[in-house]
Amino acid sequence: MRRSQINRALREMEAMCRAHGFHLPPFCAFTPAQWQTLGREYDEVRECMLGWDITDYGLGDFDRVGFSLITLRNGSRRMAQRYPKVYAEKLLYLKEGQYAPNHFHWYKTEDIINRGGGNVLIRVYGSLPDEEIDRESDVTVHLDGQSRTVPAGAQVRLAPGQSLFVPQRLYHDFTVEAGTGPVLLGEVSQCNDDEADNRFNPPVGRFPAIEEDEPPYRLLCTEYPAAR
Image (tube, rainbow, N blue to C red):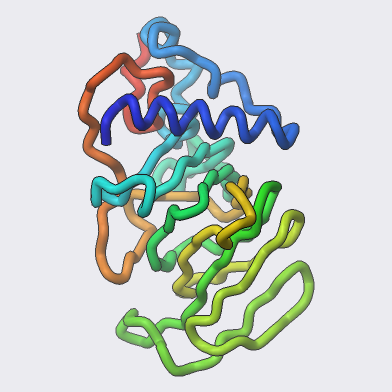
């Protein structure tokens, strides 16, 4: 992705958060120059990968496959003594036409919450013992205390305020319902590890290669400099 695309996407997500009254933690406003001055007191932000994130899944077509997100809080399974939180929280921003590819998580369970905007469509499949997609079996989903059984590959619609529980090994993808406008999603889960807890099917990447065509507006969670 070009840095200019990333900067534009981050500004759009900031505007969406403001529009829906979602206030971000202070570290989301740090400039690249500020990050160069910060010490070990912000190691939790660095090591738990809090803050801004962008993905195009390595496909180079962000407006069709990809979205913007912020990790607001997170622990670490690998450094549990230092960062003992057993939970994580994210915000995700999807525009109409964008798609988050099919995947499951080995470790974390999560709730996906429509925090505002349009409607999100989440397609669900079970998984087989060999971790391939189960395209035949019905899926029982849990939406805000209601259990519902849907066919394999059905899309579950979440309007603002609604949420879906996603257990381990449940394949799911996201898209925005056409004509409803961009969506601000919340994710509440166990500890998040985007480097080791995503099984994409078919396989894709996770973090973008960046072409530096202008200075960064904010640093991504993969770009923080070492503590001063």
